Length: 262
Image 1 (cartoon, one colour):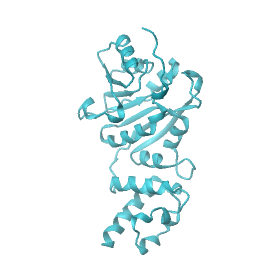
Image 2: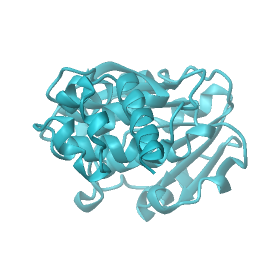
Image 3: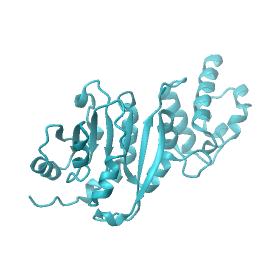
């Protein structure tokens, strides 16, 4: 069967370097789970390394041509090939209530949405690895104080330890993208339940970074801050100055402020 043609509207860039595919496969520690979901397998360059690992693999792609190629070339008992859109798919249908990891050479046009959806399912996802556009991978792993530190950095790191692993040049893809790529690993924290309301944290972080040049006193006005809480020194800072734990503490303060204001 002929090779699959990369489709621009799906953000496809097929990895053709076996060494890098194997390296990405090896980013999974496989600790505490035996199921792996691969997003955007294309022609299976990474899939073939995953199925060697004695885990149950689901390869999910919404490209019919890729699915047909995989079904013809990869007939393994521990591989399930699924034609579906990850962003719209109910993940509880994959492995029931069992834990599973996510990996892949992610389509760049939806890579941040993939992370946000993964966070919704974090109770079942102890590990997440894969390839992004380099800047996005770096941003997810970035610490406070940096210009690129933002919503994705804080929300991913609230629940996961983030590690930027290695950079991948455009030349190993077909067609080559215009940018470098980067591979990262997110490992869920031992205790990933938060001491504050999770929806509130998401709202605080998103609202703060939407006006990242302003101090929190100005960017968080919509939270109807009491005069007393505005005196807290944290509100004189900009969002990029706050660590993840400070954002959690800030959310707790806002929750308490809302309670005492009533």
